[in-house]
Length: 337
Ligand code: NCD
Image (cartoon, rainbow, N blue to C red; front, top):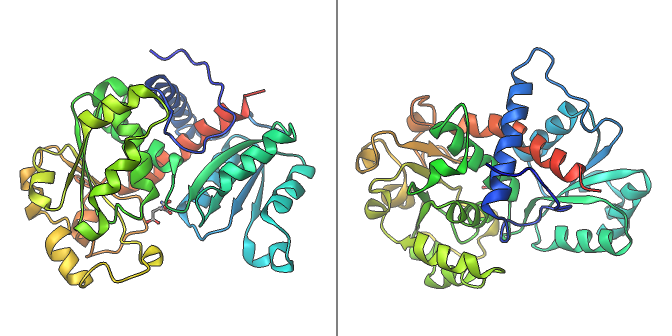
C-alpha cells in the first residue's frame, strides 16, 4: 500500500519517481475513474483554481485530455496556442508564462518541441516563489510523463481491473517497438516500467535504436535505478526475440518530423520487418495486448485490423485512462502548498 503523501510540485520527468509515487498515482487515478463512471462526472477538487494549457507544439489527445481532466475537477482552464499569440510579436516564452501567472494561474501544463522548456519555466516559477506547479506534457525527445503514467494505469487496470497496482507488474514483459530514438514516450515508459519491476525489451532498426541509447539510462539520479535498469532493460534489432513471451506490445509512431536524415529505406520495408501483425503475435503470451500512444500510421506500425480488435487492442482504453490519470496528476500537484 502506498502512503498517500505527495510532495512534488512539478512533474517534469519520471527519472526519480519511486514505486510509492507510482502506487499513489494509480490509487488516485482509480478513485477518479470511479467519478467518471458516475452520472455527474465532476468533483469540486480544484474549484477556483486556474489551469493553463501552454501547447507550443501540435496535439490532439494530450491537450484535450488535460482540458477535460481540468474541467472534471472543476478548475477554470485557459488554452494557449502559439499561432494566435503574442509570441508572434516577439514575446519570450517566460514572459508568456508570467502573463498567465499574473492572471492567477495555479498549474501550467506545458508541451514544447524543445527538450528542457518545462524545466526552465519550473525553475523560474520556483525562483519567484510563485507556487505554480508545472506538468510536462511532452518536451522534444526528452520526456512525456503523463503518457507513461496513463500507460501504466492502462496496463495495471488490465492486469487487475478492481485494484490496479504495481505489484501485478513484477516479472511482466513489455516490448516497445518502433522509433525509440526520437520517442519521449519510450523514454518515460522505460523509467516507470523498469522501476516497477517490468522487463522492458526495446526493438527497432539500428538507425532508430543505436547501441549508445542505453547510456541515457545508466546515469540515473539515484543509485537504486542503476541496478533495476541493468537488470530489466534489453535491446534488439530483430522483432521475433523481442516479442517472445511478451505480455504487452507497445508500438510507437515513426516520427518523421524529428528525423533529420533518411533513417529508413521505406515505410513498406519498415512494416515488413517491424510492423506488428496477427501472425507475429503468435510468439507472445496468449493474453498479449497491443498498445500505441497515437497518433498511429495505420498499416505501418501495426495492421489496421489489430488496431480495431477489441480483444487485442488497448488503444481506446489508453485514451480513456488518460483522463482519470491526468485528473490524478492535476489533483496531486494542485494539493502541494
Ligand atoms: C506522442 C507525443 O506527442 O509524444 N503522442 C501523444 O502524446 N499521445 C507520440 C507521438 O507523437 O508519436
